[in-house]
Length: 460
Image (cartoon, rainbow, N blue to C red; front, side):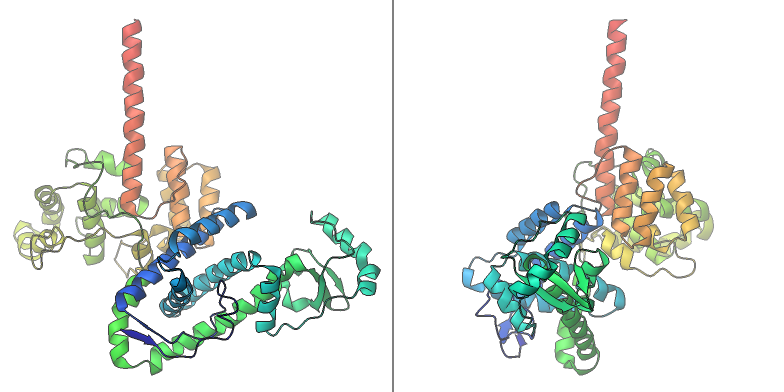
């Protein structure tokens, strides 16, 4: 059991649908529940991240977040929904507090989720939440509202907002507390204050929520590195590490649609259906006849997942390595690890191919070729690699923009779409998914070509 030892935050009973996560709940949580709750919330946050990265419109995002929350954050017992919400937040806070990149991502996604949930609260609940944040702003009185009504209407018309009415509720707040609204010119400014409508209060509250969570993440990090009891840390570290690089999609430890690939066809298949990370490793293996451990694991497990049988895998790796280290050394130093990956040695574990998240989070050193090219290649090398894959100049610009914004999986998705000439709504989350989806498209195109050819023969 893992115990959250802290008082229940004020306001949880008054507003059970939207806690502010001020402090951890006083609950005993089994480790398996600890992990399962966190995975469910992570599905929500990653879904939000993907939607934002794809540039979905406001209405599309509202529906997406609503569907994600309903699908993942419900609990069989209605009374336990609030506990699942709170527990999962604090678990992921622990997972994503450990470096700047993780903190930024978690902070952005939790704030986006908070915005959505706040907008769906009743007006009374929204005002109560403002009070919990200590935002004791008074409504703009009628006479003042009438004096600025023309200015408010001008702003509304210029930004395609609803025109204000005489009975509308407006607050006057320091402009620095609503930077998002000021930047987008969606508010009227006067003497250092911004006039915000009730419908815009979410920006004010979200700013305070983000500030609170940012400080809380740093505090959590300090506790994790210094004051957490060693026994607790020993138990939690494996779970925290796994969650930080977790893959939430299908299991690719065994090939699904395609039973096997042959050594005779592997070069053609690599060219047409391998994602860049695996094609790069494959090419380096062909050129250098060797890969370091990280590269052997990343490529080897991928090949296992796409259907390369053990005997063929041994023959494939031996043919390359023996050209550099000799057949005898290969049998002595490398063959065991290949059999081990296939579950034929050691604990006989059926090892799973690496997901995109695991590959992205890896840190290749000098002489290594594994990892994610979208993250680790220079712009010059990445541009050249994309061109070799057949990505046209227009799509290349879009891919590179995603890379610069650190949306590496979306960059890979756009590459897939450019190479195959079709959309990939689900996004690329796993190299073996890339391969599988590519093979489905390639086989469909081949069948269409064969059908057209046969029709031409029959007609002639």
